Structures are given as structure tokens and as C-alpha cells.
Amino acid sequence: MTWSFTDSAAAFRAAAAEHLAADAARNTAVLTLMDKAGRLGWWAEADGRVTGVLAEAPPGVPSLGVMTEEAARALTFPPGEEPTEVRGETAAVEAYAEATGRPWATTARMRLFRLGELTPPDPAPAGRERVATEADVPLVAAWTREFAVAIGDEPAEDYTGFVTERISEGRLWLWEAPDGRPVSMAAVSRTIEGQARVHLVYTPPAERGRGYAAGATEAVSRAAREAGVAQVLLFTDLANPTSNALYQRLGYRPVTDHLGVTFTR
Image (cartoon, rainbow, N blue to C red; front, top):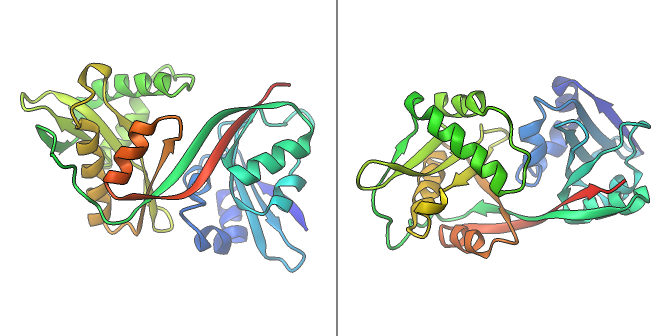
């Protein structure tokens, strides 16, 4: 039983394809990170079966996919390359963090949801949905920076490329108020192994409380379903009861809880 590592997404897929596909929803973070990860890993049992995976991106921040607690406890990194943060399902992250012997603190508690029967918001918010266009890039880039700050991430200098990719592929939707102003946004990831994840759900503070986020989320979720995505997913912050309640009203159902931790030395 051992961990193997590579920086090749192709080699990782070849080794762990069956495990990744067996529960694509719970492996969503690894699946969406693997093509840009600097380190990919898989845990193989004595009989060769893969029962654990991870993807490290950005450097020093591995995301743990589905894995046994045994695999999590056995996970080690080269000296000088130990993680500064770890994210993943709660049991695996706790097992890994405790096994390191390093002091750590919880930074986030998240819940993964999967869409069941999509239920439009009732009452419907005023306005309408639309797909974002190239002309929306400056606004969406600014909102993305605000979103990063709001969730406690270190914002990037420029999100132009990040949002342009999503807009050019038709994966970012806006909600417009009746006067035509964009007032909320939501995006969806590329589809991998039949799963795609809704993200970047954001409404500027001055526009909140009017149901715009529900409209944008329902629009992008419906678009994903109509495109044939088998599993439409999203993460919520357990500290935010408003968003957790909203997504459940739209038809999202809990899958598993996730934990983010930071090592303090």
C-alpha cells in the first residue's frame, strides 16, 4: 500500500480513472483541478486498487478526493514541501492533519450539494437571465475580485483571463434587473466525468435581498442540466445559513461535508 505522485494529468488519469469515475461527485475538486495541478497523487492497496486521490493546486494546497482514513494518515510530502493548507472531506482532512503532528486550525467548513429536481424560485425575482458576453468582462472581473475578498481568499491582481475563459465558453450567466443592469452572476465549471460545479455565485451588497442570486443560480443550473450534465454540484459555506437554505429550495441536496485547515507552523 503506497502513495504515488506525478505532475502528469495523463498518467494520473491512467492510474486512477476507475476510482475517479466511481464517485465523480465526491471527487469533484480533484477532477476540476487535475489539469492544472502541480502534484497529483493516488493511494493503491496491496491488490492494486486505487482508494485515494489528491490534486495540489495552488502549490502547498492539496485537495483530497475520496480516500480512506488509512490513506489520509499515510500521506506524506517531501521535506520542505509540506502543505500550508489542506481541503477535502472532513474525515480525511482530520485524519491527515492529526497524523502530521503539526498544529492546525480550521479555516472553512463546507457542504457539497447535488441537484435533484430543479425548482425555480417562488416568487420569481424581478428581471431576467442572460448569458454573459465579452462586454461584461470588466464588470464580472471586478465582481470576481469582490467575491474572493468576501469568502476570505487572497484576491488575484487581475481576473480578466479567468472570467474571459468562462464567458467565451458560455459558462457564466447574469441576472439583470428590470432596468437592464446586471445585478448577480453565477458560473459553472467544465463538465468532467458527467459532473459540473456551480460557482462564482455573487450579488453585490447593494443588490442583495431581492432574490437575484436565486435567479442566476437557477439559470446556470438549468443550462447545465439542458446541456446533459448528469450531476450538477455546488459547495456552500456552512457558516452561511442563507445560501444553504437558498440552494435547498432550488432542489440541491447534501452529499458530504468538507473541511479546510491551515497549518500554523
